[in-house]
Length: 238
Image (tube, rainbow, N blue to C red; front, side, top):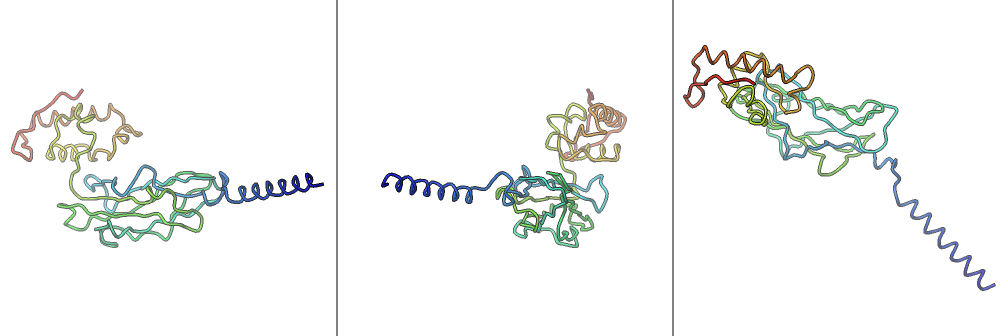
């Protein structure tokens, strides 16, 4: 009789423990795990943007990523201005952010469109920044704390592509701002912001090689000095 009583107590105790664990441990598809964040972007890793060779106003698309389960309906994302890292002025440098942005049904990624203006003459001599922060919406929680902030740094100046010395050097030779400006004028477009954009459809390596030869021919025929007073010499566009 005593052993039966002990067995009953142990069984009851085990059941309580199992029930408590199930209640406290979230499952893979727990709604609390369905959240949104900026993939691979932090407030320190700003998105650098220039209006040179672009339309005005123009739109910068900031990527977001969903963690958790998919949805059969579109879901809302809430993005607000992070004033602590913002030097731009709403209405003057950027369009007021929408009340919410949307992730399409069944999607795990989306792009938040941020509209920028370049009417301010100061953009020709300095950068302005716009900080963005993801907060909870009615559909999606704010995700990884380290990836809830992004910053767009924009200007009306030429920006040397970070990959110039790795890739564009082969097609356009040594960098200078004067050469960069002439290439934009000839191509009627600026170089992509990222190296990945170099070969994004419809662009190809052959496209950049062809324009590299056009630019080299221009500097062969025309004597042009760079910003340091040195002549820009032609090069071999491989």
